[in-house]
Length: 161
Image (cartoon, rainbow, N blue to C red; front, side):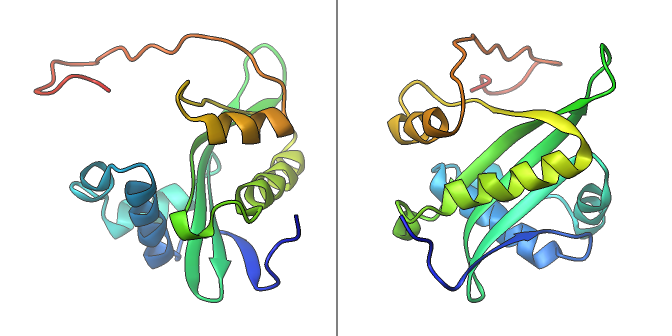
């Protein structure tokens, strides 16, 4: 599969607030969680600090000026050895641009960033019902079957999902 010629994968910098907000909107639409990604959106100062940190990585896939994909990832410094892992927290491609190799291109860019940071692995979770994500990640890596648990920090009005 060849990538669109006008596709560019861009690592967001501290001043890319508008671009980060666009990625957040894309995540909300792609995951059908518009309210989660839009209701209590962080302010510009928070996003600037996050984008400038040494532990957060945000990528945007752009076709021209249109954001068609995004990744939010975290670098986790390990304690048992001097190394780190990269955790893909969110990855999404706009519905109209799926099956074009955009997710794979973003992960390849993230692999370059991870290697430059000295990380030894990238890991990601996939919902059991998300066959497309499972197929993508199976093509790129080795599957581990684990369970995920959300442990509430304090009582919430709604159940953790």
